Image (cartoon, rainbow, N blue to C red):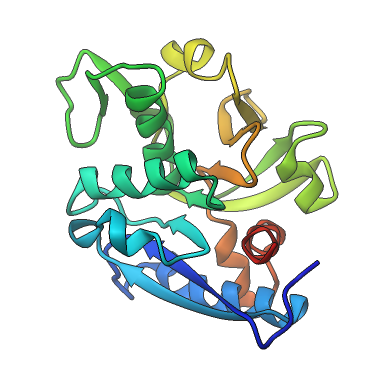
Length: 234
């Protein structure tokens, strides 16, 4: 059950705020729609990636790693994701947040110290995040949600149509190793490419390459944002 409105939750938006980015315009609207539907008092604060410290993260009920990469400080973004994953704090990552959730897991769970993001380390030998075969800049595409997954339960359907603005995603070369344990595929596109992941055994840890928050700019509540906010309130 959601908390009563007298008990407010606080969410950290991890990213370098830039209101020229469509997703950054949409996120406060999405959170407002979710809070209204669930009758939850909600405050959010933007934390720039070069200002992420563990003691600052501790006061938040949930963490959303937002689009807008490359971030000013990759390590700051990874520090926030590691905090959410390791402390059972509800986490949502979208677009760049998806990419960095995979990077954090590769480095800190699988022990791949040399795991890199191809946008910031194009010559790296282990590019966990690599250029997409087809760029998804301002694209809308179908995503097939894994049966029984948290994301499928949030949408209440096996299929969704979502918008993207990205050129990088999971390198298929590392898919089996990355997603063969508790980190699982939450959604794929029509060609079978991974478009969302979620972490088993965690209260709420979901990351999507697409940007579900964009629906809020058309006045529609993104189901995944509602599920995230509800998890933060529990």
